[in-house]
Image 1 (cartoon, one colour):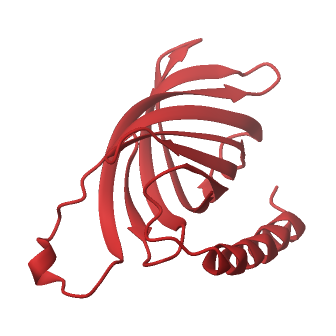
Image 2 (cartoon, one colour; image 1 turned 90 degrees about the vertical axis):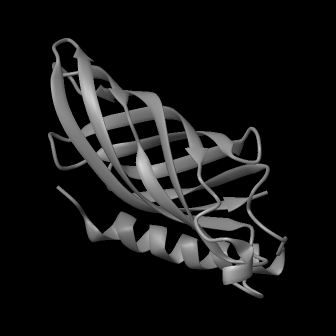
Length: 163
């Protein structure tokens, strides 16, 4: 099951990476390539590459603990909705929340019980001012299509730092 050692290492790395990201501050984390971590189902590495000012490709590799220990790999195409509040209602604030949704694929690899499916992620990103990072929470319905059709759910918290 879950050991505290890897969790402690991820926390230390996130604090260190956050300090380095702040030192290399940029206007917003809305471009470039980002890498970070997720905690939840699955727990592991998270990546994001912006394609336009509202769309991105995200991916992840992690370990699924809840349903049978297994390696989880996924890739999604997501769309952000940035205009939740008109700018005049939030004066002098560069930080913002952005809901997003998308579609993607996932594979779960486990000896004797591997699966492939379609993901439909929905979440909320927080992008702070002058720091090239993003924090997010997402809920992901999954329809496994191979070897049999089966509905599943994933949820995770995460952060990515952009370069």
